[in-house]
Length: 190
Image 1 (cartoon, rainbow, N blue to C red):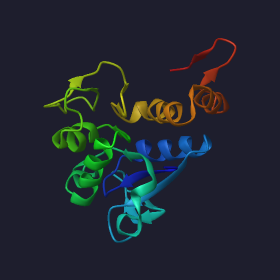
Image 2: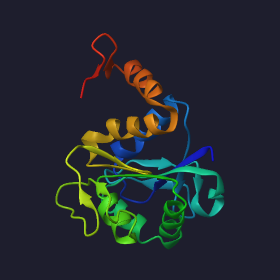
Image 3: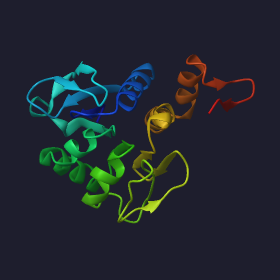
């Protein structure tokens, strides 16, 4: 269980995907981007096309550590409609393995699957949970699930994943290298 996967669908939120990938890789987390399509090229909500590392059908997820879902529209909706991914998320959660979702994805993808039942979570304002308890901070961790509210929280979201995957010291080191953490004051700038 060494590799983490960030899933891309047409209309993904640029900042949430790219900032998360960047920060995880800075921390030494092995993260692969996965297109849910048969092609590796995926276009974001703001018209940026990126090439994923792999496609869903090319990937064996048995070693998956984290499954990560950026938000954005229609990105989150496209992820939610892709049954192989939703089946993987349900299985991954039942095994107590790690899942992270930001923006619309907690409400649009995870909540309808029952993954957030009785858990505290956060999502983009205007999206409502049916089964989760609403959190009140930009990033919420509840057991094996991390959720965040949107693009402005993408850095915090990624650092929360790093803290869970590699430890708080590694998260601080990465944040400090990005000028987001002040060692002298022992505090983040957000």
